[in-house]
Length: 269
Image (tube, rainbow, N blue to C red; front, side, top):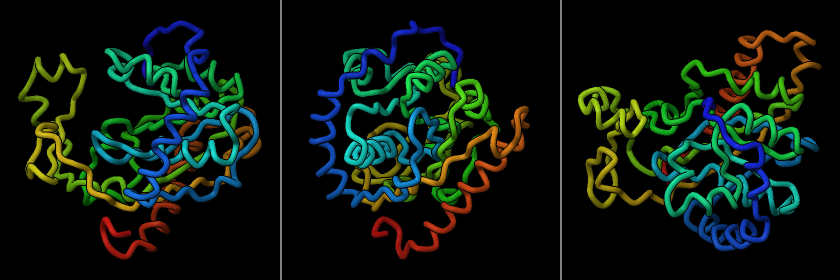
């Protein structure tokens, strides 16, 4: 989560009617193309909750729409799902659309406001580092040392709900995060505010370093919602950030290992 200052009314831009229409269009695609499945929604606590998830799918991650489609089916649109997002998603002609469907600029202030309002906030601590991880590391939980999510949950007094997804990293063959390429691009990469220029192989263009854009393969994507972590109950009134983070990553890795063991073939699932 970044430190960019934003107005305190960001969450009021959520439009439940528009979100419901969008989900109505997306749901058949997600169920048919990715055979999407969300397990464990019965574990979800009432009130505000911080959903912490691994991030998969490169430029076209499906984690949020897959989770949101099933979450709204179960809980309705009166309980918004907010996603902490990169600033690039908030600008341009599509920025207003994303804001109305629950995507909010990643900041501690924004996360705190959304959580205290009783909203469900989704965060991907690993960000770009995670979403472009090589295919050989597809089933590895790695947040690149980022722990801000723990402080966000503590500050808002809400539980952390760990969630893992599998299959998103099979939509292409991810070869490298391309940190070396970003360094070579120098000012171009800095202008895009990125240290990663991912290299992948897919359909129909083959080798790609962001461009040309390949079409994601129809990999089966399964999400698993895990029991909530009530920080104060489990770690005391003055919890150790490192200890909480290690616990969250440990339970996520265990769940991801179990999903991986179920998987028979890449893409097919």
